[in-house]
Amino acid sequence: MRKLLYAFIQTVLLVIVPGIDIHLQAQDAPFIQPVTADQVPDSPEMAAYRERLRKNPNITGYHFITLNPLATSQKDGILLLHIPDGPTITATASHVEYESASEYEWIGKTDDDRGLEVEKA
View 1 (spheres, rainbow, N blue to C red):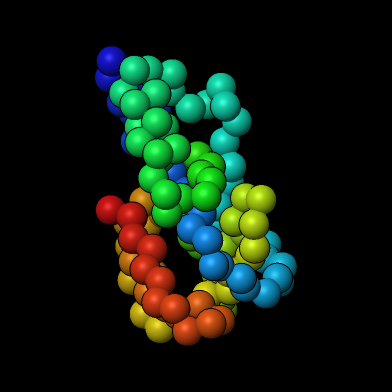
View 2: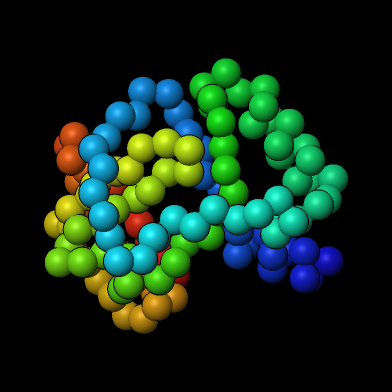
């Protein structure tokens, strides 16, 4: 059970909501990394979670992802978020606190002036 919980915590869910349309650019290493189906825990809890997502009328699709290290995913305060099967969102930092690869806070705005906060603690 502990291994399953750890795998679930290490896996992040990315939900794609309709209406996102952003421009494309390049980055050194992707911050968002899609995971394969065999990397997602297979459990009754996960099946129930997927069913709730499927029934939500505001969600058009979802992907399970991991987040790669922030330090290699942003350059000069620019963070590119490559959405699986979707757009790439460009975000510019307004505030960064970086303690380590596992403890940081990155706050900024996207190129269409939406707020964005990435925090790992």
